[in-house]
Image (cartoon, rainbow over all chains, first blue to last red; front, side, top):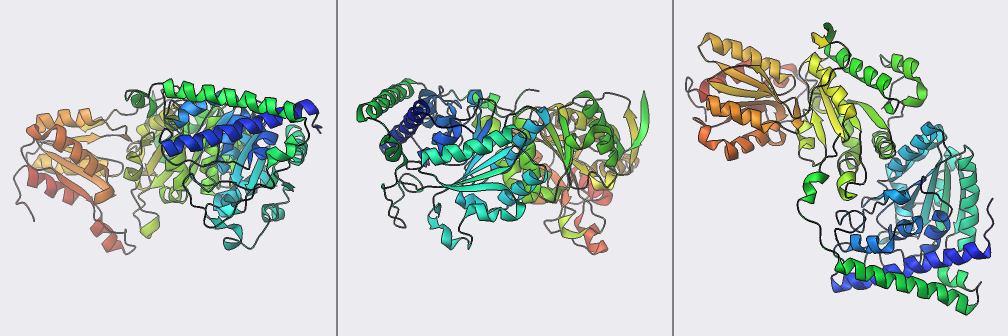
Length: 311
Length: 326
């Protein structure tokens, strides 16, 4: 089991800052119209993305849902090409054709995200099966919210992953809200880890805003998955500090910044050491915005090549 | 060299040959180990041939994920309607991944299903629903009408780098036909002209191709020569071959077992009206299933379905030898 050393902790802080500042910038650009469409920010939940993805390799397939920027960044997606994607530019990771809800970065093993809640959960199962068939020690990881758990495909996936003992790591960011509605209005089962209990999935529920706790729990599961075990479910209790989407009036919830994962990890470092990480992230994001704004939009001719792949 | 096989065995032959040829071809389905599919498990092992629970969303989603990360799964769905349980995966995920990723990934998945079992199987096992999929960019849809094409289109489907909905008509299951030996590929997007004719073009798919050929024989006795075209894949659709034929005959009858407003024929009618209008000597006539849920009761089931008589009447109408009905 990996122990989090000071260098790793500082890197996690840096990842969280990169996600936080990137998304704050995206929020501003959404308001000014540079980023079109529907944008879901993960501000407040960065600890999960950072702690999980920092332990993964490029050959581990990661999937996510509609709130995916943080997962892509933590898995290694370059900020400039991600920002260009969100602005619909030709230099974007997906050449501007996917946008906020559909980021893919194959080079870094970020295999996809979906705008349909839970849609990538069974797809991650397929990548876990592929890992098993290849016979290497790669794994598949899927991030989803507590809202996805009430959908049928979640149970179908858990059933098959356990039946076939596939190296699938199910990471639930339980922020207590499915879109605009509290969990209590959708289900009587408070803990997602209890939902999978009958399948005897190895599982844990941790404070998702405690980066060290997430890092340790996930690291334990990951080591087992690499050694042939699986599946695993890690429920991370966290909190969205923004609405469901940018522009959401959030009348249903009063977010609190008391349990901010960045603040909690930052307290482990000297102020100037922590600030240096933040400043570095700021500079990178400034450059990313410049890169994106200067990039052209994709040509219409591009679409012809996108309908079908050549055999 | 060729050999004779039932339609369904021709499909199996293609899957078996492709699984022998390429280790990345997988086969998923609900009853794989306890039915006529058992030989697949014996031949290729339970790693590659997976017995799944009745979980269409997970089956198809898993196929997509395996395809995204290096494999070529074939999913046996048995009934086309069972795919409807998993429409998010079929329509939102499989065909959109490549486009939404800017071309970074491909999804070589085959979704195999039978359709159109109008033999008293009632409202949920009889649908001809291929047209629902043909309008989804990124999906390909194959619909063979002969045993040879059943083999050749399946082999092509498995080698294709895109998601393919492979629909085989259940009423053709035990129809025998000559099937080429060994490797045999039928290209997608190339219609077959099943019968040459100069007076009228009939386009038909799946089980209705033989009905159209039967009607053409009846019409030949009346001196009307019908050309019969089988698109073989409805997406991509070989509109060129249809337009060339219409340019020659000037008349078009479209036959489709789908209900009218979700039919291949309506799409073809639109294309020909737009691009072949000047060739037409008479309005296009469509012979489809009626816009009704297929009834269980046998006489009513026959009543909603296209048949040879309806095709003959439609052709007589467009060539002017029968009065136009309102």
